[in-house]
Picture 1 (cartoon, rainbow, N blue to C red):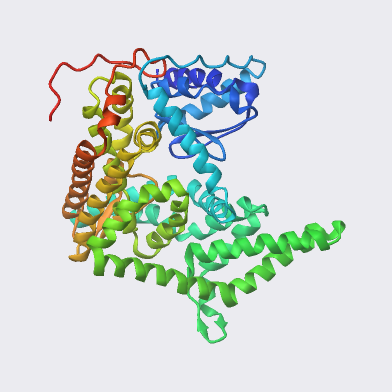
Picture 2 (picture 1 turned 60 degrees about the vertical axis):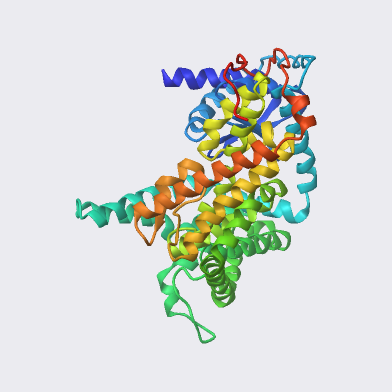
Length: 500
């Protein structure tokens, strides 16, 4: 039955993206089906958003359909199979014109798409494109980080309770195996992303985790296995790409298969051992020290700033710079202290969306969009609410950031009081982050503080949006019945009195 449901979802999506002939590539990340298109104009954005299984759409370097964790991994193979089976199908017809009348959820979604497109153009700077490529290196590693992080948490729980002691070493090995070799995966993905031979990038990065590096005297500097971590692996593999490309230009074709890989690994390996490992190790230590001191010394203020500015960072594309920082902290301390604080931005967004729902009792279209997107918002998937509700409305986006700042300040305060904790993996947010939390004070206190931060974010985001998220003119324009909206499911206006 579940297979039929996933195939039905794929079948519903396919004609709305222009049919199989309009698709050039298919992939997926943790929550999104990513497709490359021949003709963007054939896509029916509003009809896609109206599908029950679709949580939202985002246009970036690929067209991304948000399906949620778990669902996307099941729908993608069905979608790929349908494309292969129906390559000769005709493209879907163009979407119908939006209805006349008041402002609908479809109108907001169109505004959100336009804002996203404009922001995408502004983000297409060399620096931000480089950050996007860095993110592409780490995103494929997220499923393994999540799986190993949850197993590590389970192992810690069993250890503390003294249950099944024979199982603990096995769980420890399962949870730690990936992290002990993460540098190799980073090197492989780096070379692949920057146009080199992936296995050569992995081979150079593997030097970092090889136990024998402890025997090497690097100009009097002591080397340790794993020194430099993911930052060293990234730098080593990136160097390998440039060495390989240089060799391809100068080495005769008849000797290329012998000389190019040899020189690539030799030159990059020597530079890694006698320079990059030490420099990357210092950089990694500095990142860990700075993050911990930042929250220990100015936790409440630091949390307020981080939680309040994360949504704008996402809009600017600068949040991608945090991915290797998160990974470095997980590698060093076992968890990243930053992610639970940044997750408060999503809590503020949820609170703001609930306030929008209650402030617009007559606009069934926008209320239906909020209701359909809230479950994903509680699980930390914020795109449907951001681009479908708060950002096109304007002021609610700002008040959502205020809610995120309040939640971040709450969590940061406890760091300042000595209750440090973080996430053992990156990717999830909202309620989905609970299984990945770990800290020095024990599971109960850690979970309670994070839950408290979410509640503060929800409450402050709601209050700020309810009282300050709309001008009188906005309410006059928005709090009307726009009539039928073909892009969303409608609901009858509520009969109960709305709180003043």
